[in-house]
Structure formats: structure tokens, C-alpha cells
Amino acid sequence: MAKIGNEIIRLKEIDSTNRFFMDWLNREKPEEGTMVITDYQTAGRGTDGAVWESESSLNLTFSFVLYPTFLAIESQFYLNKIVSLALAEIVAEVLQGRDNMRIKWPNDIYIGDQKVAGTLIQNGIKGSLFEFAVIGIGLNVNQESFIGEAANPVSLQTVAGHKFDLEDILKLTISKIEKWYELLKQGTKMAIDEDYLKLLYRMRQLSGFTFKGNHIQDKITGVNRYGQLILEIPGEKIIECDLKEIKFEPLPPSPPPIGGGVRGGG
Image (tube, rainbow, N blue to C red; front, side, top):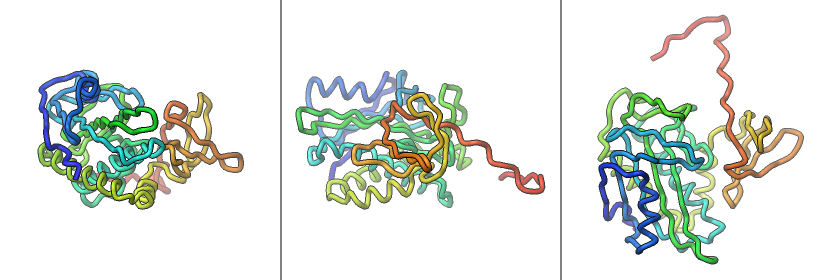
């Protein structure tokens, strides 16, 4: 087993847990699975470079290091897949009865159309060899309001209506990531691919995107072996795009029920 969390370094405040690891790896090689967790990040970032807003001591913000030398360089996107699947599984487990957990490519976790978790993976490659992966995770647990630049955040508490124990969620997170990492080491890539696509946000749903600055209407039809998003423009062509080339546009509001009635919420 990877023994993620075999050593946990707890910090009250830091700029970025990923940056902490990257600096550490420049000096020495910590044991695989070593984790750094902080109550508050002053400069937390997501995959797309956006600021990750997190109130002190209310959420989980941590990073850990892996040495997935068994992976070919062209297969590094599998780390995004397994971490996303682990987080989606956690959210589904603690919010039992809900079936609207999705993975927004490449590795954000959504409840409906709101983001509850994000991942930043920084890989170390030397020549043709995979050296290390620093995996940073932000999971909104008990924060009730968000005032930052993110347009659609949500937390487990705001959905469930009650607080969660951060240590319980951390233990669950570690166990789920270990499970999926072991599956990857065992070579179950086909099953991982299938599970990832089953949960992919807006999969085969005609949606609006901005691609290289231009508005397009298309469907997500998959992810290629290099982690690029595959889009199909109906009747036109298939495009494969990187994160910096594509932007998801908000979905239009749902139409009111036929007859104009208003349904109560719960």
C-alpha cells in the first residue's frame, strides 16, 4: 500500500501546501505518502490557476507526494482520474441518497452545478521517467458562505445541513485515495476509464463552451489518452483540447414547470 498519510505534517498557516512540497523535493525525497495539511492557505490555487477560497479550520486543504514510477509519462492523467474518483466517492458516501456528483474535467468535483472539491497535480518528469507527483486537494467541508472570485462553490455542510468532523473526512479521504491508487498500480486502467467517463460532467450533453476565444456549441464525448477533452461539434468535427484552450460556459436556467406552478423547496 502507498500508506498515504504515514506521516502528516500539520501547519497552522502556509501559502501553499503544494509549494511546500515542491521546495522540499528540491532538497530531499520525503517518504511516499507524506502529507502536509494546513488550517489555512494564503495562496491556494486550483488547476486552472484560480484562487482557492477556504476559511481557516473549516475545510480540508492538504497535499501529499507519490512516486508513481510504474506509470509511463503519457499515462500521467490517470492520477487525475483516480483522485477525482476517490473524491467523488467520498462525497457520494457522506451525502447518501444523492446521485448528482460529477467530475468536471479534468478533476473538479461538482454537486449538481456547484464545485465542492478541486485538485492540483504537479508532476516531476526527468527525461523519459516519472519521478514524483505532488497532489494538492481542497475539499469544502464546513464553510457556509463564499465571497471570493469562484462563481459556484458549495460545501458538504451547505448541502447536508449539518457540520462534519474534519478528521473523519480526512481519514475517509486517505482511505479512498489509497484504494484507487492501488487499483491503478494493479493495472485496472480500463475500469478506471469507464468509471471516470460515467461521472464526467456534461458528458454527451449539448453545451456552450469557449474554445480558443470562440463560442461553440458541442458535446463532450470523452478524454483521450493524454488527458485532453474530446468535443464533438454536431455535424462538423471532433476537437481535442487542453485546459488552457477551453472554458465551460454556464448552463442556461431550467425552464419553469408547465402551467407556471411554483414548487416548494426542501
